[in-house]
Image (cartoon, rainbow, N blue to C red; front, top):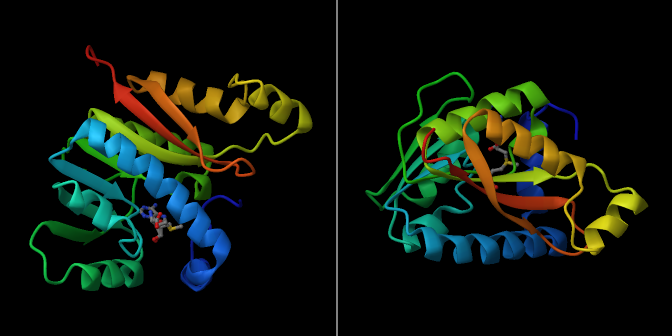
Length: 200
Ligand SMILES: C[S@@+](CC[C@H](N)C(=O)[O-])C[C@H]1O[C@@H](n2cnc3c(N)ncnc32)[C@H](O)[C@@H]1O
């Protein structure tokens, strides 16, 4: 995906795809993993960075968490706000990462943003997420889908370079990779659970 290219056309495409079987399958796969991890983490507060139209808000609120959401696109933030207009436990702010103070939370989540960013920007966002929360969930697309990588992956080993790069970036900002879940057999998308090192 071309880095740094989220724009009104991307927004229209993202919202239009909502009803497609592929989108619904990806949504269901993400929700299944997130729901499992949420049960384990039981966060009282969730920071949802690049929250979009609030697609995942119901997961955080059903887990009993207070939600701080941030998105750079005012149109997406407006849809997100309308989704939770009757609730007092979700705050939606318009703003871009990196480079702004993020509120501290038990869990910081960033789904479907990092693949849009240049690597340096993505690493800076990661550092801000880890600084804000002891547990961080990010979504990445693994670019190395070569037959070799697939064969190794199918053998149960994570050799994929993107994951190694992410683990190294996480290590630099004081976090370790706790879980990696592939979102469907044919999908390049992964959800990663990172934990801040105790000493960090
Ligand atoms: C593909 S959508 C994903 C939305 C939501 N996380 C989801 O999974 O449904 C990407 C979102 O990232 C937002 N975004 C793009 N660049 C951003 C940045 N630098 N800081 C914060 N939000 C950003 C866009 O406005 C858009 O709502």
